[in-house]
Image 1 (cartoon, rainbow, N blue to C red):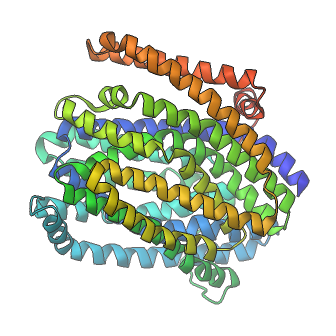
Image 2 (image 1 turned 120 degrees about the vertical axis):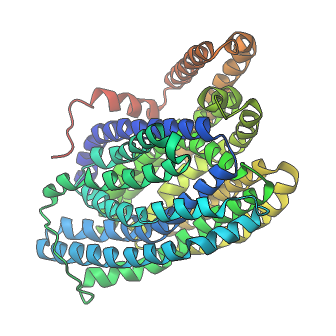
Image 3 (image 1 turned 180 degrees about the vertical axis):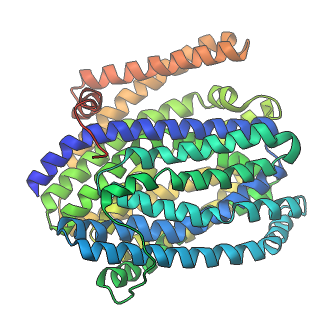
Length: 527
Protein backbone atom coordinates (compact mmCIF):
# COMPACT_ATOMS: atom_id res chain seq x y z
CA UNK A 1 0.00 0.00 0.00
CA UNK A 2 2.98 2.34 0.44
CA UNK A 3 3.65 1.80 -3.27
CA UNK A 4 -0.02 2.52 -3.92
CA UNK A 5 0.30 5.77 -1.99
CA UNK A 6 3.47 6.86 -3.81
CA UNK A 7 2.21 5.97 -7.29
CA UNK A 8 -1.22 7.46 -6.57
CA UNK A 9 0.35 10.62 -5.21
CA UNK A 10 2.06 11.19 -8.53
CA UNK A 11 -1.34 10.91 -10.24
CA UNK A 12 -2.83 13.22 -7.62
CA UNK A 13 -0.78 16.19 -8.89
CA UNK A 14 -2.13 15.95 -12.43
CA UNK A 15 -5.61 14.85 -11.39
CA UNK A 16 -5.99 17.63 -8.82
CA UNK A 17 -4.95 20.24 -11.37
CA UNK A 18 -7.51 19.02 -13.89
CA UNK A 19 -10.24 18.70 -11.26
CA UNK A 20 -9.40 22.17 -9.93
CA UNK A 21 -9.75 23.65 -13.42
CA UNK A 22 -13.07 21.84 -13.96
CA UNK A 23 -14.48 22.85 -10.58
CA UNK A 24 -13.25 26.44 -11.06
CA UNK A 25 -15.15 26.62 -14.35
CA UNK A 26 -18.21 25.15 -12.65
CA UNK A 27 -18.04 27.61 -9.76
CA UNK A 28 -17.51 30.58 -12.06
CA UNK A 29 -20.52 29.53 -14.13
CA UNK A 30 -22.46 29.11 -10.88
CA UNK A 31 -21.58 32.67 -9.89
CA UNK A 32 -22.65 33.84 -13.35
CA UNK A 33 -25.99 32.06 -12.84
CA UNK A 34 -26.42 33.79 -9.46
CA UNK A 35 -25.50 37.13 -11.04
CA UNK A 36 -28.19 36.59 -13.66
CA UNK A 37 -30.76 35.74 -10.98
CA UNK A 38 -29.81 38.68 -8.74
CA UNK A 39 -29.73 41.11 -11.66
CA UNK A 40 -33.04 40.01 -13.18
CA UNK A 41 -34.99 39.37 -9.96
CA UNK A 42 -33.10 41.08 -7.08
CA UNK A 43 -33.54 39.48 -3.66
CA UNK A 44 -37.22 39.21 -2.87
CA UNK A 45 -39.94 36.75 -1.88
CA UNK A 46 -39.92 35.54 -5.50
CA UNK A 47 -36.25 34.56 -5.28
CA UNK A 48 -36.89 33.13 -1.81
CA UNK A 49 -39.58 30.93 -3.37
CA UNK A 50 -37.12 29.72 -6.03
CA UNK A 51 -34.45 29.09 -3.38
CA UNK A 52 -36.85 26.91 -1.39
CA UNK A 53 -38.19 25.12 -4.48
CA UNK A 54 -34.59 24.26 -5.40
CA UNK A 55 -33.58 23.42 -1.83
CA UNK A 56 -36.19 20.66 -1.37
CA UNK A 57 -35.06 18.26 -4.17
CA UNK A 58 -31.44 19.02 -3.28
CA UNK A 59 -32.22 18.14 0.34
CA UNK A 60 -33.47 14.69 -0.64
CA UNK A 61 -30.65 14.22 -3.15
CA UNK A 62 -28.04 14.93 -0.49
CA UNK A 63 -29.83 12.80 2.09
CA UNK A 64 -30.33 9.72 -0.08
CA UNK A 65 -28.01 9.92 -3.09
CA UNK A 66 -24.91 11.40 -1.43
CA UNK A 67 -25.26 9.25 1.66
CA UNK A 68 -25.47 6.18 -0.56
CA UNK A 69 -22.88 7.12 -3.17
CA UNK A 70 -20.15 9.13 -1.45
CA UNK A 71 -20.13 7.50 1.94
CA UNK A 72 -21.12 3.91 1.14
CA UNK A 73 -20.92 3.14 -2.59
CA UNK A 74 -17.34 4.30 -3.30
CA UNK A 75 -15.64 2.32 -0.46
CA UNK A 76 -17.48 -0.91 -1.37
CA UNK A 77 -16.98 -0.44 -5.13
CA UNK A 78 -13.27 0.35 -4.55
CA UNK A 79 -12.88 -2.86 -2.56
CA UNK A 80 -14.39 -4.96 -5.38
CA UNK A 81 -12.28 -3.09 -7.93
CA UNK A 82 -9.07 -3.72 -6.01
CA UNK A 83 -9.87 -7.44 -5.74
CA UNK A 84 -10.90 -7.56 -9.44
CA UNK A 85 -14.31 -9.07 -8.63
CA UNK A 86 -15.96 -8.17 -11.95
CA UNK A 87 -19.11 -10.26 -11.54
CA UNK A 88 -19.75 -8.79 -8.10
CA UNK A 89 -19.24 -5.28 -9.50
CA UNK A 90 -21.89 -5.79 -12.19
CA UNK A 91 -24.46 -7.23 -9.78
CA UNK A 92 -23.70 -4.57 -7.17
CA UNK A 93 -23.86 -1.57 -9.53
CA UNK A 94 -26.95 -2.71 -11.43
CA UNK A 95 -28.84 -3.49 -8.21
CA UNK A 96 -27.98 -0.13 -6.68
CA UNK A 97 -28.89 1.75 -9.88
CA UNK A 98 -32.26 -0.02 -10.21
CA UNK A 99 -33.16 0.60 -6.56
CA UNK A 100 -32.19 4.26 -6.91
CA UNK A 101 -34.37 4.69 -9.99
CA UNK A 102 -37.40 3.20 -8.28
CA UNK A 103 -37.01 4.94 -4.92
CA UNK A 104 -36.14 8.40 -6.23
CA UNK A 105 -38.96 8.35 -8.75
CA UNK A 106 -41.40 7.53 -5.94
CA UNK A 107 -40.01 10.33 -3.73
CA UNK A 108 -40.15 12.80 -6.62
CA UNK A 109 -43.76 11.88 -7.36
CA UNK A 110 -44.76 12.28 -3.71
CA UNK A 111 -43.12 15.72 -3.50
CA UNK A 112 -44.78 16.71 -6.77
CA UNK A 113 -48.19 15.98 -5.24
CA UNK A 114 -47.39 17.68 -1.90
CA UNK A 115 -45.88 20.87 -3.38
CA UNK A 116 -48.97 23.11 -2.83
CA UNK A 117 -49.18 22.20 0.87
CA UNK A 118 -45.43 22.77 1.31
CA UNK A 119 -45.86 26.18 -0.36
CA UNK A 120 -48.69 27.14 2.02
CA UNK A 121 -46.55 26.25 5.05
CA UNK A 122 -43.59 28.31 3.80
CA UNK A 123 -45.83 31.25 2.97
CA UNK A 124 -47.20 31.26 6.52
CA UNK A 125 -43.64 31.43 7.89
CA UNK A 126 -43.02 34.39 5.56
CA UNK A 127 -46.10 36.21 6.86
CA UNK A 128 -48.22 35.09 3.88
CA UNK A 129 -46.00 37.17 1.55
CA UNK A 130 -44.69 34.31 -0.61
CA UNK A 131 -46.59 33.45 -3.81
CA UNK A 132 -47.74 29.85 -3.24
CA UNK A 133 -48.69 29.37 -6.88
CA UNK A 134 -45.26 30.42 -8.13
CA UNK A 135 -43.54 28.17 -5.58
CA UNK A 136 -45.72 25.20 -6.58
CA UNK A 137 -44.96 25.59 -10.29
CA UNK A 138 -41.19 25.90 -9.71
CA UNK A 139 -41.16 23.04 -7.23
CA UNK A 140 -43.00 20.74 -9.62
CA UNK A 141 -40.68 21.66 -12.49
CA UNK A 142 -37.50 21.00 -10.50
CA UNK A 143 -38.62 18.10 -8.34
CA UNK A 144 -37.52 15.40 -10.79
CA UNK A 145 -33.98 16.82 -10.76
CA UNK A 146 -33.76 14.62 -7.66
CA UNK A 147 -33.88 11.62 -9.99
CA UNK A 148 -31.54 12.90 -12.71
CA UNK A 149 -28.88 14.30 -10.35
CA UNK A 150 -28.95 11.17 -8.17
CA UNK A 151 -28.26 8.90 -11.15
CA UNK A 152 -25.62 11.38 -12.26
CA UNK A 153 -24.06 11.14 -8.79
CA UNK A 154 -23.87 7.37 -9.13
CA UNK A 155 -22.05 7.79 -12.44
CA UNK A 156 -19.65 10.22 -10.72
CA UNK A 157 -18.92 7.68 -7.99
CA UNK A 158 -18.08 4.99 -10.54
CA UNK A 159 -15.87 7.29 -12.61
CA UNK A 160 -14.02 8.65 -9.57
CA UNK A 161 -13.31 5.09 -8.42
CA UNK A 162 -11.56 4.56 -11.79
CA UNK A 163 -9.56 7.79 -11.25
CA UNK A 164 -11.63 9.67 -13.84
CA UNK A 165 -12.35 13.10 -12.42
CA UNK A 166 -12.42 15.81 -15.09
CA UNK A 167 -15.79 15.24 -16.82
CA UNK A 168 -17.71 14.58 -13.56
CA UNK A 169 -16.24 17.77 -12.11
CA UNK A 170 -17.21 19.68 -15.26
CA UNK A 171 -20.85 18.50 -15.23
CA UNK A 172 -22.09 21.24 -12.83
CA UNK A 173 -20.83 23.87 -15.29
CA UNK A 174 -23.13 22.40 -17.94
CA UNK A 175 -26.07 22.64 -15.53
CA UNK A 176 -25.27 26.29 -14.79
CA UNK A 177 -24.83 27.26 -18.45
CA UNK A 178 -28.13 25.65 -19.43
CA UNK A 179 -29.86 27.55 -16.61
CA UNK A 180 -28.35 30.84 -17.77
CA UNK A 181 -29.48 30.22 -21.36
CA UNK A 182 -33.05 29.50 -20.20
CA UNK A 183 -33.23 32.68 -18.08
CA UNK A 184 -31.77 34.97 -20.74
CA UNK A 185 -34.02 33.63 -23.50
CA UNK A 186 -37.25 33.01 -21.55
CA UNK A 187 -37.22 35.67 -18.82
CA UNK A 188 -39.53 38.05 -20.65
CA UNK A 189 -42.18 35.32 -21.10
CA UNK A 190 -41.83 33.16 -17.98
CA UNK A 191 -40.24 35.42 -15.35
CA UNK A 192 -38.55 33.55 -12.51
CA UNK A 193 -40.13 30.28 -13.71
CA UNK A 194 -37.37 30.34 -16.36
CA UNK A 195 -34.84 29.68 -13.55
CA UNK A 196 -36.65 26.51 -12.53
CA UNK A 197 -36.96 25.28 -16.13
CA UNK A 198 -33.26 25.91 -16.67
CA UNK A 199 -32.28 23.96 -13.54
CA UNK A 200 -34.36 20.94 -14.62
CA UNK A 201 -33.00 20.95 -18.18
CA UNK A 202 -29.47 21.45 -16.84
CA UNK A 203 -29.81 18.50 -14.47
CA UNK A 204 -30.61 16.25 -17.44
CA UNK A 205 -27.48 17.43 -19.24
CA UNK A 206 -25.49 16.98 -16.00
CA UNK A 207 -26.43 13.30 -16.16
CA UNK A 208 -26.06 12.71 -19.89
CA UNK A 209 -22.56 14.22 -20.19
CA UNK A 210 -21.13 11.52 -17.89
CA UNK A 211 -22.69 8.45 -19.50
CA UNK A 212 -20.22 8.09 -22.42
CA UNK A 213 -17.25 7.75 -20.06
CA UNK A 214 -18.87 4.90 -18.15
CA UNK A 215 -17.57 2.58 -20.88
CA UNK A 216 -14.23 2.64 -19.01
CA UNK A 217 -15.85 0.77 -16.14
CA UNK A 218 -16.92 -2.10 -18.41
CA UNK A 219 -20.36 -2.15 -16.76
CA UNK A 220 -23.48 -2.30 -18.90
CA UNK A 221 -26.75 -1.43 -17.19
CA UNK A 222 -29.59 -3.94 -17.03
CA UNK A 223 -32.56 -3.81 -14.60
CA UNK A 224 -31.61 -5.99 -11.65
CA UNK A 225 -32.25 -6.08 -7.91
CA UNK A 226 -30.32 -8.63 -5.87
CA UNK A 227 -30.93 -7.68 -2.26
CA UNK A 228 -29.14 -10.83 -1.08
CA UNK A 229 -25.83 -9.73 -2.59
CA UNK A 230 -23.30 -8.88 0.13
CA UNK A 231 -22.46 -5.49 -1.38
CA UNK A 232 -26.10 -4.47 -1.68
CA UNK A 233 -26.81 -5.51 1.91
CA UNK A 234 -23.71 -3.69 3.13
CA UNK A 235 -24.42 -0.45 1.31
CA UNK A 236 -27.90 -0.17 2.77
CA UNK A 237 -26.73 -1.12 6.25
CA UNK A 238 -24.21 1.74 5.98
CA UNK A 239 -26.68 4.09 4.32
CA UNK A 240 -29.15 4.50 7.19
CA UNK A 241 -26.74 5.94 9.77
CA UNK A 242 -25.05 8.04 7.06
CA UNK A 243 -28.46 9.30 5.94
CA UNK A 244 -29.25 10.29 9.52
CA UNK A 245 -25.86 11.99 9.79
CA UNK A 246 -26.33 14.01 6.59
CA UNK A 247 -29.93 14.56 7.63
CA UNK A 248 -28.67 16.35 10.71
CA UNK A 249 -26.54 18.62 8.54
CA UNK A 250 -29.44 19.34 6.17
CA UNK A 251 -31.77 19.89 9.11
CA UNK A 252 -29.34 22.58 10.27
CA UNK A 253 -29.49 24.19 6.83
CA UNK A 254 -33.27 23.98 6.84
CA UNK A 255 -33.45 25.60 10.28
CA UNK A 256 -31.19 28.42 9.06
CA UNK A 257 -33.45 28.96 6.06
CA UNK A 258 -36.60 28.94 8.20
CA UNK A 259 -35.12 31.59 10.48
CA UNK A 260 -34.05 33.62 7.42
CA UNK A 261 -37.52 33.35 5.85
CA UNK A 262 -39.08 34.59 9.08
CA UNK A 263 -36.74 37.63 9.10
CA UNK A 264 -38.41 39.12 6.03
CA UNK A 265 -38.12 39.51 2.27
CA UNK A 266 -34.97 38.31 0.54
CA UNK A 267 -33.08 37.01 3.58
CA UNK A 268 -33.15 33.38 2.42
CA UNK A 269 -31.76 34.48 -0.94
CA UNK A 270 -29.16 36.75 0.71
CA UNK A 271 -27.98 33.87 2.91
CA UNK A 272 -27.75 31.60 -0.15
CA UNK A 273 -25.83 34.15 -2.26
CA UNK A 274 -23.35 34.76 0.56
CA UNK A 275 -22.74 31.02 0.92
CA UNK A 276 -22.25 30.64 -2.83
CA UNK A 277 -19.47 33.26 -2.80
CA UNK A 278 -17.84 31.78 0.30
CA UNK A 279 -18.12 28.34 -1.28
CA UNK A 280 -16.09 29.36 -4.34
CA UNK A 281 -12.61 28.75 -2.85
CA UNK A 282 -13.99 25.89 -0.74
CA UNK A 283 -15.51 24.15 -3.75
CA UNK A 284 -12.64 24.81 -6.13
CA UNK A 285 -9.75 23.54 -4.04
CA UNK A 286 -11.01 21.61 -1.00
CA UNK A 287 -13.46 19.56 -3.05
CA UNK A 288 -10.77 18.94 -5.69
CA UNK A 289 -8.30 17.61 -3.11
CA UNK A 290 -10.89 15.44 -1.39
CA UNK A 291 -12.34 14.15 -4.67
CA UNK A 292 -8.91 12.88 -5.70
CA UNK A 293 -7.80 11.64 -2.27
CA UNK A 294 -10.98 9.84 -1.24
CA UNK A 295 -10.63 6.74 -3.48
CA UNK A 296 -7.01 6.43 -2.27
CA UNK A 297 -8.07 6.81 1.36
CA UNK A 298 -10.75 4.16 0.83
CA UNK A 299 -8.17 1.71 -0.55
CA UNK A 300 -5.78 2.45 2.33
CA UNK A 301 -8.51 1.91 4.91
CA UNK A 302 -9.61 -1.34 3.19
CA UNK A 303 -6.01 -2.63 3.35
CA UNK A 304 -5.52 -1.32 6.91
CA UNK A 305 -2.62 0.85 5.74
CA UNK A 306 -2.87 3.26 8.67
CA UNK A 307 0.49 4.90 7.92
CA UNK A 308 -0.50 5.66 4.35
CA UNK A 309 -3.90 6.90 5.45
CA UNK A 310 -2.29 9.28 7.95
CA UNK A 311 -0.02 10.61 5.20
CA UNK A 312 -3.04 11.24 2.97
CA UNK A 313 -4.95 12.88 5.83
CA UNK A 314 -2.03 15.14 6.74
CA UNK A 315 -1.57 16.17 3.12
CA UNK A 316 -5.26 16.99 2.74
CA UNK A 317 -5.47 18.96 6.01
CA UNK A 318 -2.39 21.05 5.24
CA UNK A 319 -3.44 21.82 1.68
CA UNK A 320 -6.95 22.82 2.82
CA UNK A 321 -5.42 25.22 5.33
CA UNK A 322 -3.00 26.57 2.74
CA UNK A 323 -5.91 27.73 0.57
CA UNK A 324 -8.77 28.31 3.02
CA UNK A 325 -7.00 30.55 5.57
CA UNK A 326 -5.87 33.21 3.06
CA UNK A 327 -9.24 32.88 1.28
CA UNK A 328 -10.96 33.65 4.58
CA UNK A 329 -8.82 36.74 5.15
CA UNK A 330 -9.16 37.98 1.58
CA UNK A 331 -12.93 37.50 1.33
CA UNK A 332 -13.59 39.08 4.72
CA UNK A 333 -11.35 42.07 3.98
CA UNK A 334 -12.87 42.74 0.56
CA UNK A 335 -16.42 41.44 1.15
CA UNK A 336 -18.20 44.68 0.22
CA UNK A 337 -16.42 45.40 -3.09
CA UNK A 338 -16.60 41.70 -4.05
CA UNK A 339 -20.39 41.56 -3.60
CA UNK A 340 -20.78 44.95 -5.29
CA UNK A 341 -18.74 43.76 -8.28
CA UNK A 342 -20.54 40.43 -8.58
CA UNK A 343 -24.17 41.32 -8.03
CA UNK A 344 -24.95 45.05 -7.84
CA UNK A 345 -26.76 45.80 -11.07
CA UNK A 346 -30.35 46.17 -12.29
CA UNK A 347 -32.68 44.90 -9.52
CA UNK A 348 -29.87 44.26 -7.01
CA UNK A 349 -29.22 47.58 -5.23
CA UNK A 350 -26.60 49.04 -2.83
CA UNK A 351 -28.64 48.06 0.25
CA UNK A 352 -28.61 44.45 -0.99
CA UNK A 353 -24.83 44.64 -1.35
CA UNK A 354 -24.46 45.77 2.26
CA UNK A 355 -26.75 42.98 3.50
CA UNK A 356 -25.03 40.14 1.60
CA UNK A 357 -21.46 41.40 2.23
CA UNK A 358 -22.14 41.54 5.98
CA UNK A 359 -23.37 37.94 5.97
CA UNK A 360 -20.35 36.89 3.87
CA UNK A 361 -17.87 37.92 6.57
CA UNK A 362 -19.35 35.40 8.99
CA UNK A 363 -19.64 32.63 6.42
CA UNK A 364 -15.93 33.11 5.69
CA UNK A 365 -15.09 32.50 9.36
CA UNK A 366 -15.94 28.84 8.87
CA UNK A 367 -14.17 28.12 5.57
CA UNK A 368 -11.28 26.20 7.09
CA UNK A 369 -13.62 24.14 9.26
CA UNK A 370 -15.96 23.36 6.35
CA UNK A 371 -12.99 22.02 4.40
CA UNK A 372 -11.63 20.00 7.33
CA UNK A 373 -15.07 18.57 8.03
CA UNK A 374 -15.23 17.19 4.48
CA UNK A 375 -12.03 15.20 4.85
CA UNK A 376 -12.72 14.10 8.44
CA UNK A 377 -16.12 12.66 7.58
CA UNK A 378 -14.65 10.78 4.63
CA UNK A 379 -11.89 9.32 6.80
CA UNK A 380 -14.53 7.80 9.08
CA UNK A 381 -16.62 6.64 6.11
CA UNK A 382 -13.54 4.99 4.57
CA UNK A 383 -13.21 3.00 7.82
CA UNK A 384 -16.94 2.20 7.40
CA UNK A 385 -17.48 3.93 10.74
CA UNK A 386 -20.70 5.81 10.11
CA UNK A 387 -21.89 6.01 13.71
CA UNK A 388 -19.27 8.53 14.85
CA UNK A 389 -20.13 11.25 12.29
CA UNK A 390 -23.81 10.55 13.04
CA UNK A 391 -23.42 11.17 16.77
CA UNK A 392 -21.43 14.35 16.17
CA UNK A 393 -23.95 15.59 13.59
CA UNK A 394 -26.82 14.99 16.00
CA UNK A 395 -25.05 17.06 18.64
CA UNK A 396 -24.71 19.82 16.05
CA UNK A 397 -28.51 20.03 15.64
CA UNK A 398 -28.99 21.18 19.22
CA UNK A 399 -25.97 23.49 19.06
CA UNK A 400 -27.09 25.06 15.77
CA UNK A 401 -30.68 25.59 16.91
CA UNK A 402 -29.51 27.25 20.12
CA UNK A 403 -26.97 29.48 18.34
CA UNK A 404 -29.50 30.44 15.63
CA UNK A 405 -32.04 31.39 18.28
CA UNK A 406 -29.51 33.52 20.19
CA UNK A 407 -27.48 35.11 17.38
CA UNK A 408 -30.37 35.99 15.05
CA UNK A 409 -31.69 38.33 17.74
CA UNK A 410 -28.53 40.43 17.66
CA UNK A 411 -27.18 39.94 14.13
CA UNK A 412 -30.18 39.06 11.92
CA UNK A 413 -29.19 36.82 8.98
CA UNK A 414 -25.47 37.32 9.71
CA UNK A 415 -26.05 35.48 12.98
CA UNK A 416 -27.22 32.45 11.02
CA UNK A 417 -23.97 32.47 9.04
CA UNK A 418 -21.90 32.77 12.22
CA UNK A 419 -23.86 29.92 13.79
CA UNK A 420 -23.07 27.72 10.78
CA UNK A 421 -19.35 28.49 11.10
CA UNK A 422 -19.28 27.83 14.86
CA UNK A 423 -21.10 24.51 14.46
CA UNK A 424 -18.56 23.41 11.82
CA UNK A 425 -15.72 24.32 14.20
CA UNK A 426 -17.27 22.27 17.03
CA UNK A 427 -17.74 19.28 14.73
CA UNK A 428 -14.12 19.40 13.55
CA UNK A 429 -12.74 19.56 17.10
CA UNK A 430 -14.84 16.60 18.28
CA UNK A 431 -14.03 14.45 15.22
CA UNK A 432 -10.30 15.19 15.49
CA UNK A 433 -10.26 14.08 19.13
CA UNK A 434 -12.08 10.85 18.26
CA UNK A 435 -9.91 10.12 15.19
CA UNK A 436 -6.72 10.60 17.18
CA UNK A 437 -7.91 8.07 19.74
CA UNK A 438 -8.73 5.68 16.90
CA UNK A 439 -5.50 5.93 14.89
CA UNK A 440 -2.94 7.50 17.21
CA UNK A 441 -0.87 10.56 16.35
CA UNK A 442 -2.04 12.41 13.23
CA UNK A 443 1.12 14.44 12.73
CA UNK A 444 -0.31 17.33 14.71
CA UNK A 445 3.02 19.07 15.20
CA UNK A 446 3.70 19.31 11.47
CA UNK A 447 0.13 20.49 10.80
CA UNK A 448 0.33 23.08 13.60
CA UNK A 449 3.62 24.52 12.35
CA UNK A 450 2.14 24.79 8.83
CA UNK A 451 -1.00 26.50 10.11
CA UNK A 452 1.01 29.03 12.13
CA UNK A 453 3.07 29.97 9.07
CA UNK A 454 -0.05 30.11 6.91
CA UNK A 455 -1.81 32.36 9.44
CA UNK A 456 1.12 34.78 9.62
CA UNK A 457 1.38 34.99 5.83
CA UNK A 458 -2.39 35.46 5.54
CA UNK A 459 -2.44 38.22 8.17
CA UNK A 460 0.32 40.12 6.37
CA UNK A 461 -1.51 39.69 3.07
CA UNK A 462 -4.75 40.93 4.63
CA UNK A 463 -3.01 44.00 6.02
CA UNK A 464 -1.66 44.90 2.59
CA UNK A 465 -5.09 44.46 1.01
CA UNK A 466 -6.87 46.49 3.70
CA UNK A 467 -4.70 49.59 3.40
CA UNK A 468 -4.46 49.32 -0.38
CA UNK A 469 -8.27 49.18 -0.66
CA UNK A 470 -8.61 52.24 1.58
CA UNK A 471 -6.45 54.13 -0.91
CA UNK A 472 -8.06 52.75 -4.10
CA UNK A 473 -11.70 52.73 -2.96
CA UNK A 474 -12.46 56.20 -4.32
CA UNK A 475 -11.17 55.20 -7.77
CA UNK A 476 -12.83 51.78 -7.79
CA UNK A 477 -16.35 53.13 -7.32
CA UNK A 478 -16.26 55.39 -10.38
CA UNK A 479 -17.77 52.70 -12.61
CA UNK A 480 -18.05 48.92 -12.87
CA UNK A 481 -15.04 48.57 -15.17
CA UNK A 482 -12.78 50.44 -12.74
CA UNK A 483 -14.06 48.21 -9.91
CA UNK A 484 -13.41 45.01 -11.88
CA UNK A 485 -9.94 46.15 -12.93
CA UNK A 486 -8.90 47.22 -9.42
CA UNK A 487 -10.38 44.12 -7.76
CA UNK A 488 -8.63 41.80 -10.24
CA UNK A 489 -5.36 43.59 -9.57
CA UNK A 490 -5.80 43.37 -5.80
CA UNK A 491 -6.64 39.67 -5.91
CA UNK A 492 -3.55 38.97 -8.02
CA UNK A 493 -1.40 41.13 -5.75
CA UNK A 494 -2.76 39.47 -2.60
CA UNK A 495 -2.14 36.02 -4.06
CA UNK A 496 1.38 37.00 -5.06
CA UNK A 497 2.19 38.42 -1.62
CA UNK A 498 0.85 35.31 0.10
CA UNK A 499 2.65 32.82 -2.15
CA UNK A 500 5.92 34.78 -1.87
CA UNK A 501 5.68 34.78 1.93
CA UNK A 502 5.03 31.03 2.04
CA UNK A 503 8.03 30.47 -0.23
CA UNK A 504 10.15 32.58 2.12
CA UNK A 505 8.82 30.51 5.01
CA UNK A 506 9.99 27.38 3.12
CA UNK A 507 6.61 25.69 3.33
CA UNK A 508 6.13 22.23 1.82
CA UNK A 509 2.54 23.05 0.89
CA UNK A 510 3.53 25.63 -1.73
CA UNK A 511 5.64 22.99 -3.48
CA UNK A 512 2.53 20.82 -3.83
CA UNK A 513 0.62 23.65 -5.51
CA UNK A 514 3.52 24.46 -7.84
CA UNK A 515 3.80 20.78 -8.78
CA UNK A 516 0.17 20.80 -9.81
CA UNK A 517 1.11 23.06 -12.69
CA UNK A 518 4.46 21.45 -13.47
CA UNK A 519 3.03 17.96 -13.68
CA UNK A 520 -0.30 18.82 -15.23
CA UNK A 521 0.98 17.90 -18.68
CA UNK A 522 2.76 14.77 -17.47
CA UNK A 523 -0.25 13.01 -16.01
CA UNK A 524 -3.36 11.83 -17.78
CA UNK A 525 -6.62 10.88 -16.29
CA UNK A 526 -9.57 9.48 -18.12
CA UNK A 527 -7.62 6.46 -19.24
